Image: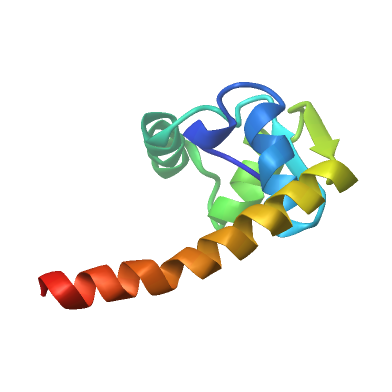
Length: 104
């Protein structure tokens, strides 16, 4: 389940996260909302929760129960592209290590 600014533009972050994690990524319609929204939910929970109600049951039953969710599967071309990127990135770590040794 993805949430946060990375998922602000529908489909974009979800697509790349699915490739990076090699698994389906689901997002709710509120996925792009940030910390202020989360803090407002916590405040509402603190004020309006039922006796003995947990945060998890509050979120599942009251906040997210009717939220639309979309799930995106990893695309094979994106998986291949991410694997190529990661291989090049790992090869570049030696350059970074050498540069850091020279400077520090």
